[in-house]
Image (cartoon, rainbow, N blue to C red; front, top):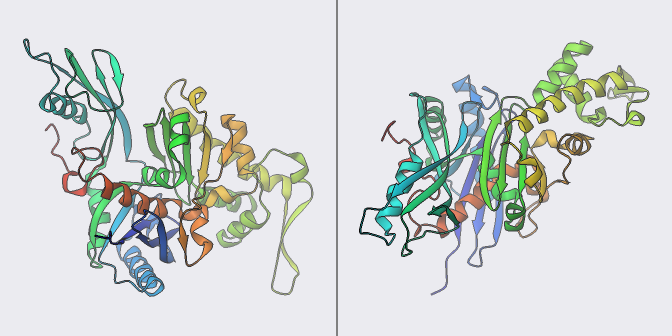
Length: 404
């Protein structure tokens, strides 16, 4: 019997934009983008809801656009969430086999997995993702379950993501009022990594940095497994606000000046002269010293990247052989790749997925990396339904009681 295609929808409610992408996963695992619905966000600050009615209207508009563009009636979505309250930590669970029982069984492995997933978290937090990294048997690393092998001590190493429960629940509530079902809730950088990194990059060591309007998300993969993830509540809007404060320009003109004239590199040649904005008739309506403009942009973005660097595990930078992958709207800033190279000293890439087809080329825009990554995440989830629980966090077991 021929395999049927499967349609998945990714939803990102970001600081700058609210976006849905409808993707069709074909029988040969190729992905086709059927449509994109996007609207400018209102009511979101630093990746979190602060005005429920405003963002509700934005989501309703984006949903209508996505359904019109794809000719699909959307019933459920994979939802990306972000915010500085979400944290990723590594935790290992150790289980010693009973005396006289030298062969590792599935029950032994599950005991180790349960211990590893039970990270101590703040009382108002919930578990979002328990992601298996690897196993250890008597101190020897195993990439797969050691069931059936001889040993005394089995360990499971997990990357556990958790965040404030009420904030995540409010995002789910917003989606369900459309009304839409939530297939899964995914921490944004984990979704982005599904789009940005292939197997080779993960094995060689790679860092994904997704810098949007209000947040900078990151995910680090070493040796093929996730090693660190997190969110910094700083993004492109903070750069615009800095320009506004220094120049006195209205926020809208500061944003336009940033996009059309700004440069984040330290190249002195790019900071010569005057940056201008012109009106509809071609006359200069704003003039700003280009050196001042670029220095404001550079300082904020350098600070942001250094915050990411500080959060990486000790000595992990040396293990990044696959490079640093930049996504998000702010990554389009001129000179940003040069700045990132200065900070990290690693090859800098802007990922694309040439095997994805669609009605337009916009899905290759780095602004859509997270929402496209949700489609990939959904695809992976479909193929791992037969895997043991806990490989990827499903919404049905997302809200584990604390201390369980």
